[in-house]
Length: 257
Image 1 (cartoon, helix red, strand yellow):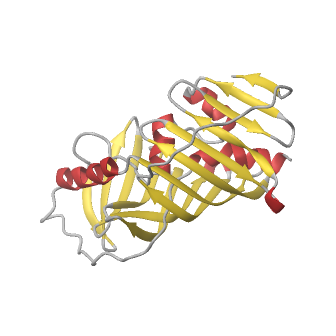
Image 2 (image 1 turned 90 degrees about the vertical axis):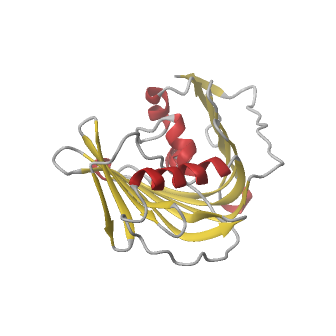
């Protein structure tokens, strides 16, 4: 039970997707031909082109306290509506998470408990073992890791990818961007001494309607020994038919954060 609760709580972190599968032509990274401001605009344009999505897949979670896996289905509409349903072995429903600008609702069917409240960073942290804001969660599922405003402190090419380094709030934010897909393939946050605090790695790149998206995303929080891997087995970008309906049993135990 604890493992499933951990999985359901951790799932919001997550990131994206994918389905179909054509490959884009390889593009060489060259900072002389593409200023950092132009690259940032290309990433923003890709993000703007995704307005909604549906999909399903599996998720695996590991921490110092628990580990487990589950299947999930999701509906997402930007900028701030997300519903994820979880399913355990043999089709057993495990619960759901609903998240929007005004509230979040997480229901665990195994112990018939619902947790609800306003989606403040502190409340979200109570059910997700990583410090993420609502916007960061939505961005993760759509494959968007927006660059900070302003010019980067460093802009280079590393192993065929654009690397951008920003110093914000005493922390270094580093992005590795694939020039062929305009996707952030790796995003790392480290403290002032260089110790990693958070890392996201995207892989298994696919393309749908001219938009690239990763089918596998791994998130890690090294200081807490937490790892989350999401696999998307199917995905529909800019889906037209979305459902955010959910039901909580009347006898469910309720916790308000």
